[in-house]
Length: 305
Image 1 (cartoon, rainbow, N blue to C red):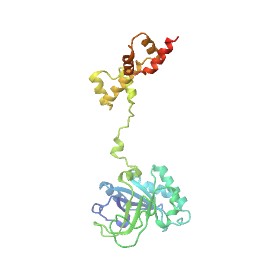
Image 2 (image 1 turned 90 degrees about the horizontal axis):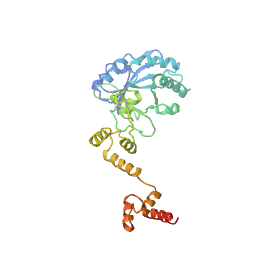
Image 3 (image 1 turned 45 degrees about the vertical axis):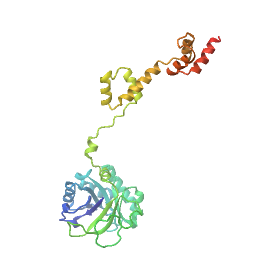
Image 4 (image 1 turned 180 degrees about the vertical axis):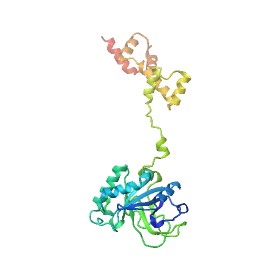
């Protein structure tokens, strides 16, 4: 998916004229700066049906104070867009000193407050400093400063793992007469929404999956009279999602099995002449599911007593 990230520098941009899949908007910086365009840009992004992202530019100050300031400003958009931490050197004395510790602490705190895992934005040359924090990465790496539109295959793509790649700060797109940061997301719309905590129509209305009973279990219920008879049984089984013919076949098997007699019982019936003689007896026994040789062996044993 193709997208842009914007801040107050893009004040006045007509987002409806800029074609893209997602828009990541700067919300806050440190513990006292709030982007005056944030609410307008975030609302328009959602109204246009685009995917939303929101980021906080870290100043490396008090972790909780910066996180609470950010969360307070994006409160009404939580659950509607992904969250990101922008970790750069400018105005950040902690950069290059305790990158992993600060980023992990901020992300962990935000995750506990929102249930959403924040992304970490950082330049490619410094990504190893925060990779071990274990949060999704949004990596910035540019091939040059030439003007460009969205690129299908940005330079150096695939040489490292990230969820979002920012590949130009000199993006030029129809609908805006100025530079834009261009990004490519390596996830689907559905995955983005999941990471953002968006409650889709499918997830909110989906019926819970009901585990179906085995054919053998249903057959036992049929024999117990729980599914009725004839067409009534057939209709009930079909509506419940069962194959009537498969169930009936299993019913027949269970009925047959319930009437199976022991080898000893059949052997005594053979002696009593109930199964005929010679080939006739063998044929009858086989059709009834019995082993003629096994039965004859038992007959011989009983006769020898």
